[in-house]
Image (cartoon, rainbow, N blue to C red; front, side, top):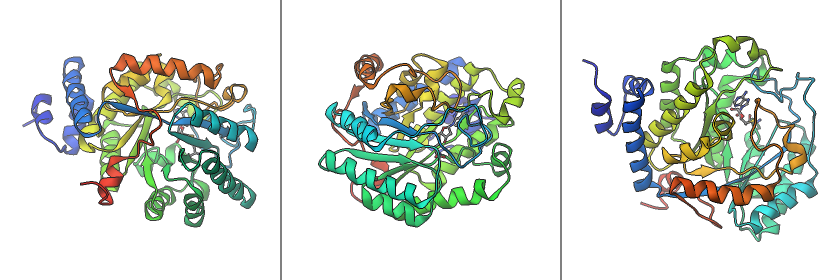
Length: 364
Ligand code: SAH
């Protein structure tokens, strides 16, 4: 007998079928889901939002992911690489404005001078903030040795989205070559955990060919891997990518948006104390999309502090928000936005994943 949404929400753990039912919830039912996820968030992580000042320092990439606007083969992408000096200035801005943490994100490179450059940057950022600025990195697939080097240099959180946990779907959205190997990506996630990072993953929602079943599996994959953090957001097509050919097969943007909120809410209920980011891509669909995510379970927001003149060119997808602003404009805006959600911004704190600490036995 199929359960009602009310019945499912009385449970603490959900089967794949339960999750699919929740993903298919109508407006009335999804509001029940959001009420529960908001309650779980309040109890387990509190009504605090932590900042990660996002620095997208380069869009130069060796990879060729079929959905991504900065893929190697996109000749229309205006490539940039922000100088160390400017990156450090952005980090200083985050520190001075009490953001607590930053995220360094970029296209992927594997040459040794790049690896060394990142190592140095991490050390410099630690130095300028007297060790006080938390650092998340999101720099793709590297060897375990590199992950270790970067960890030793001061990064303590790493975000590497699995993009889709379904192997068949993974290969529909990535080229079938050694550079885009599904098993390798999973291995990278395990290596990050081994090194000791707070490890985050995530997926895109509303991809062509993706089913409700896939999305339910994505959430169970995250639970199974026992991740500490998650960043997931709607897929938004980019016209200079091969996946754009399937644009007519996509669900409407609003539906992708709503499904993302449901995914966040369900994940909050099944992995109570992890950090969940309100993805920037939500804001590309709805001007207050990230705030809506905060209301249903997310607790991390990543204000963009990339120097303004480069922002336009980190175009992973179309209609990326706030590309014409400077970091200073963001700061005041974020304050007002978070106040709208009823949560408060926790300035000057790292906001580490409680799940990570509990997993390691640091807190009971
Ligand atoms: N090279 C790094 C950073 C990639 S960009 C890495 O692989 O980890 C960060 C995220 O942007 C990706 O993980 C992907 O999930 C997301 N992204 C890329 N193209 C997108 C698109 N068209 N729509 C929505 N999200 C996209």
